[in-house]
Image (cartoon, rainbow, N blue to C red; front, top):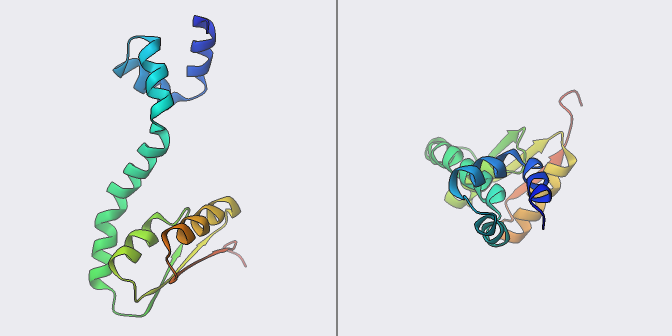
Length: 125
């Protein structure tokens, strides 16, 4: 692979460009790292875990009812964190993005959560 094509590859992802330029000096290191570790995906999951973990704990400690709705749930990260702590609550996620809801449903199925449901809905409906 030529140096120019490697540079073009880096331009496609700003996060890759930052991480590679800070952590790795050689293209070989980058190539190995890139093939072994999907760091964009892992970084996003880590970020949301750090963000939602304390919030989910606080909500789980305070909630007294039997259901909770998350409007603008995205991929459902917050609901999954709450579900880990309280499997008795019926959790519902609503988002306008069909692709986000599809990802959330897929993850809920993979994790085996029966008390979580997701719906696509626009705020004006």
